[in-house]
Length: 146
Image 1 (cartoon, rainbow, N blue to C red):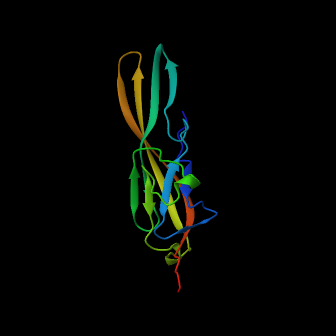
Image 2: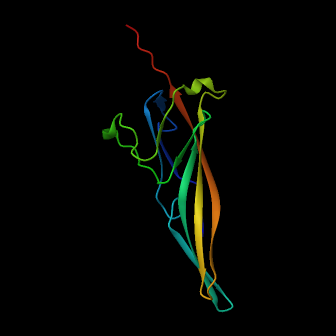
């Protein structure tokens, strides 16, 4: 069974620029290796163990000292959403990324995978696995002059 960190989706895109105060959408691809469910079985000596893994939460470290905890995969951003905030996993920056030493916010997404297992001989249990992914984004401040 392969469990990976989130396949990060974020607005602004890493190649673009976001704006202070605008909604940031956070999401991951909903695949078996990036969000689950992901199942596998193994047999030995007449006993088969089946395990199923699912992401129970993703903690997003936003690069500005703040975190966002999401219990869903998030909603991918679409242009028609405009300035609406994400319905389930979002953020708004209050400072530009130019305040960091690199000029970008280093965003880390940490998935907590919950793995439930069951043996044909009776025993069952649960374990936790952690996986990370990261991306750098630029957020600028817009000033309007009269």
